[in-house]
Length: 144
Image (cartoon, rainbow, N blue to C red):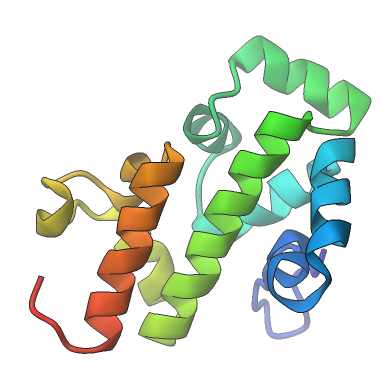
């Protein structure tokens, strides 16, 4: 995970890099083993969300979040969902070319998503794919 540097720029959790820069098998093994909670914290900072709000998007209850903090590791399904959100943030950043714009776009209701925020729409894999498709249309200047 990359943390804030001297210029206070927040960088993507290593989950983003593993999704794009390493062998698929390595990423799958990391997910199966469960990502460390530092990945959760890094994504929370990137998205500008509170811990409970991010946990809600990842379908983690408050009591489970407490247990995960104690153990220091997410389970496989939670890790997979965290990677989904890290991937969406990275895609939004690529398209919008600004951290603040990417973060804001993910939190604003979108007409193309029935006026639901991309973060909420992406709570399922099918929804995440639609958010990615919308980002693709934005990238190519297609009215959505």
